Length: 471
Image (tube, rainbow, N blue to C red; front, top):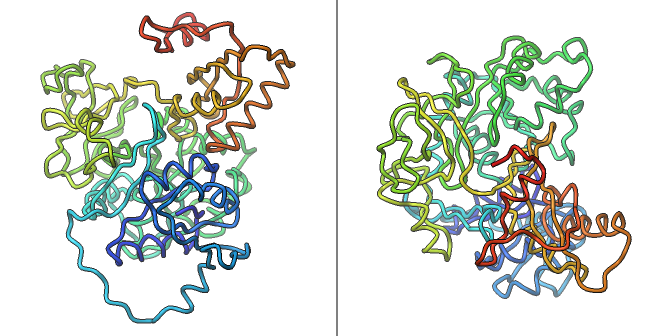
């Protein structure tokens, strides 16, 4: 499903589940290569696509033999005889009655793709039980123990990720609450303030990048009435105390909570100031029902002492938010679940009261504005350009987005174009082929890349090049 915020997005998910089918949310920012890989890997039979990304879907279709039908949303005209139909034409022409399929809690429900942080993107397969498993942290971190009759939930994040769909959208609908959908393109902080005021939003889930952008708006307290906002949950990257302080002041004492999870096991840890004190520098406590520990990164044994750094892990068996498997990747599933624990690949600590603090990531994933970007996928896209012989990508600090991808490129023999022109060309190449947020913000041209004896790029050397104090 390649659709922005809107009713067609929700209808497609629910219809798929009632059919006994599996839904696959996809970002409207994906280019044809990114779409083709995910559609083919999941053996998708139907693709619902918005007019804004219809051409990319058409280009990708030749590489997806399983794809039978494309349903178009918006004003784009479906091509007769090409397996395309207009979404609402299909709905209008369907029977009003349908016998739904009985599904079990363990039955397959949804595949959400990671961003290829270690190789190709991985399809994370979840069961129907996932939604119920998300409710404890939704009620605590996202609602601060209050579910009001007039609640209105809103997130500017695209409805293509686990953090939007299953942190806000479906938990909110489960409790019968009003959900604000807004298809306004790139995030606009002024527009966000206007939406919060106009629709009396009570629960505003925003990634730290969005909040940082809103902090740049001049004197919002006197220009917008946003006192309706009661809870501001956030996640995807570290929130930071400066954001918390600003949000509390701007939104008249709203509860500002940090939540933690990942595609494979979401909504595990978070703040709930209605039940427990806020502790600066931590992500809060494990949500009810989840056994979260700090384990030894080498052995996956929960032997790490209180306060010492280890890997954040959650007990796998019986936890409804834990994924079933990586689609078609049993070896990677086996590395993710070890010794009875789902390993998050994030390092952290836990104190004597159970508050968990994030320390760093084990892998090289780049978290930019809440999006997880896999360097390998960007490197592969760069390497497909005729001017590129080799490429490496790392994340570098950015005041607004937390991190942004930077690339290091070895040019192919005979390429001597102007560096500035080449940089722009390669940036556009990645932007058009992958997601728009994945393109490298800076490209440096090198004679060779630092590599190990086995030929792997030494990203640590590149990070040290950017910051000599980096390890």
